Image (cartoon, rainbow, N blue to C red; front, side):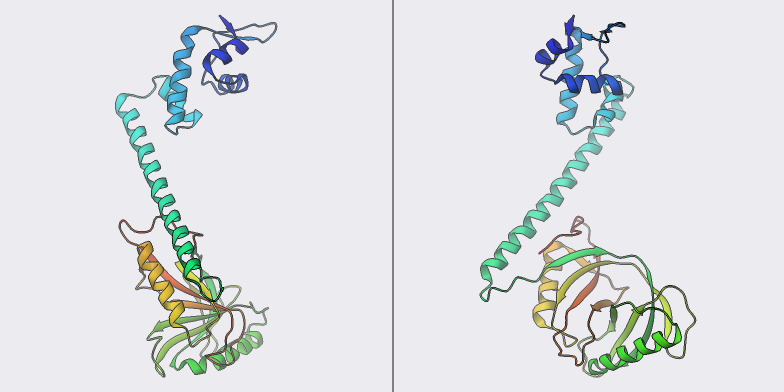
Length: 283
C-alpha cells in the first residue's frame, strides 16, 4: 500500500484533494490507521482516480461523480446525464459567442466614432411588477411636461407619500404621431391606492426590457431608435406586442426637445434560436 504522499505523486492528485475526496465519500482510502489517522491507498484505486479525472474533464461536479463511479446509475441514466451536460456546455458556448459578438460590435463602434463620444450601450433588464399612479391621454408630446407636473403635484397632495424621483412615460401607440399619441405618464407609488379623478393607480407588469440611456429628450432621436433596432436585430430578439415601450426620466423635461437624461426601455421576447440570455450585455 502507499501512504497518501506517495499515492499523491503516483496519481498526480494533491494530498489535500485526496483528503477532501475521502471526506465526501468520493474516494475512500483502502486503509486508515486507527491510531495515527494516516491514510493508505492501493494501486487498484488508481483506476477510480483516473475515472474521477475523466468526469472532471467532462465538467461534472465531484458530488455528481459519486453515483457515476459507484455504479448506482444504469447505462440509460448515465447517457441522460451526459446528454444533459452536453446541452449545458452547448448553451454556455452559445452565450459566450453572443458575448464575443457584442464585444466585437463595441470595438467596431469605437473604431467608427469620429467625435470621441462613447457609443450608446444597450442592456437587457428583467423588471418586476410595481404600482404606479398615472394619467393616460391621446395628446401631443408637447403636453407631456405639463402632464408630469400635474401628476406629481396630485400624487403629492392626494396620497401624501414621498415621491419617487422617476417619471415613467408609456408609449401605447403612434409615438411618432404629432398630436395623436396614446401615451401614459406615471410615477411609482407604494402600493394599491384608490383612483382619484383621472388619476389611475395600477400595477405595471414586470417585463424583459432592452434599455438604452440617452439625452435626446421627449422628441426622441433617430440615432437612439436606430441603434436599438439594429441591436435587437443582431441579437435575435423580437419586440413584445403586448406591452408598450417605456421611457424613464430622472429629470423633468421643460420641452420635448430638452436634452435630459432618460432611458428608453423596449419590451422584448426571445425568438427561437435567438438571443441566449444577454442580461447585462452591452452592444
